[in-house]
Every structure is written in C-alpha cells, then in structure tokens.
Amino acid sequence: MKRFPSSRCFFLLAAIAFLPHWGYSQPKDTLDVLFVGNSFTFYWNLPQVVGAMAATQGIPMRIRQSTASGATWEQHWKGEKGLSTQAMVKESKWDVVVLQNHSTGAIDQPVQFDDFGKKWIAAVRASGAEPLLFLTWAYHSNPLQQPAITEGYTRLGAETGTDMVPVGPIWSEVRRLRPDLDMYSDDKHPSPEATFLIGLIFFKKLTGQKVASIPNRLQTKDQYGENLYLSILAEEDAAFFRQLVDESDLPPFKGKTPKN
Image (cartoon, rainbow, N blue to C red):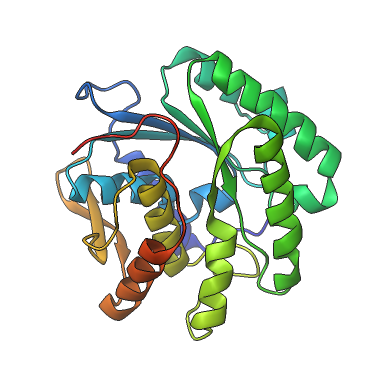
C-alpha cells in the first residue's frame, strides 16, 4: 500500500486523535455506527466526515472504525494487522456495522470475498447490529473493474439479504458527468472531493434524508476547542455532488435510522 505524504498523514491522524473517546455519553436516539475496512474507509477521515455531516443537521451519531491499510475481511476475521474487529463488534452495542473489503477482493479473491463476507454478516447480526455493505469503486487506471466489483457486492447482498451503499456506481457517474473533477489522490484512493461525495452517500443512506443542506465546509473541534476542518470544497462542486446524491436511487437503510 502506498505511503502517505507526511502532510496528509498529519492531517489524518490529527482529525482522528481529537475526537471523543469510544463509549462517551450520548443521547438515546444516537445512531451507533462501526466502519470495518481499510484505507478506502479511513482515507481523508471518511467516518469523521459522515459524523460531521450528521452534526450539521442535528442528528446524533457515534461513529468508530476498525481499519488497517490493505486489510481484507479475512484479515479482520483472523485479527491480523493488529486488528481487533471481532472484539469491537461483540463488546459494544452497534446499530450498524459497515463492511468494506479489499478494493479488488471481489475480483481477485471471489471465494474469500463470499466466505468471509458471509461470516461477517452473520457475526454482525448475532451481535444485534445490522450489516451494511460498502460497495467500492474502480481504480483510476481501470474503470472496467466497476462491473465486477458491483456484481460481487450485489450477489453477496442478495444471497444474505444485506443492504448496501452503492458508492462505486455513483462514483462512476461522477467520472462520466464531470471528468474535470479529481476524484483520486493516487490510482486508487479517494481525493478530499471524493470523500465528501462518499460522506453524502452514507449520510443519505443512514438517515433517509436529503443532503441538499449539507455545507461545503465540515469541521470538528480539537482538544483545545479549536476548529479542525475535515473538508473544504468549492461550493459549485459540493452543489453538484449534493444534487447527484439526492437524485440517485438510494432506498433508506433497512435498520435503525436516527431522528433529528
């Protein structure tokens, strides 16, 4: 997996370090979400971006993550790469557990993709939470990957009755409609703009609400109470993303949805 530039790594770690600790007091109607994945999830602080979007709409969410660069569902299951995902799923009460496999897992390792996808879906349900599949995107160098990725997640979802977030297909539509937008930080990872788009998709899916009023600047607070910006987009680009997501076919999540 490619190393982060030092400035980007600092931004990433700072945003995560200053968030409240796991288990803090929260309103009863808080939506508790755990993201399980790899750099496709943690790049540019996607979990925190989703939480910040919810906060701008007065929707309480507690969002945490179990991620490691390049991690597969099998490695999460076996506790490799220093991961303790099984313990996190079992030891805390989650409403939703988002499952994101390695970026090419559905293409290169379809048997493991299906086997460990089903293991995780069963384990999440056994914990009392609802699984949600994170359908990812094709690499910049090969948009022809998308049909196979989409087919893998769609098949797994259909066989297990599991809902999914169709990030990849919506991402492909952005590439078609706005080829001028830089959606990649490298050949595979999302840019800050793409992360804003992914955040909008997750917000709409998890809440069932439109994204038209999500601001183009998202922030949280550091340990000193100073503003820490997670996202700053040109308003015209943010408006395009908001319209695209609101016009996309995104049925509300089947599980618990928060109320603002």
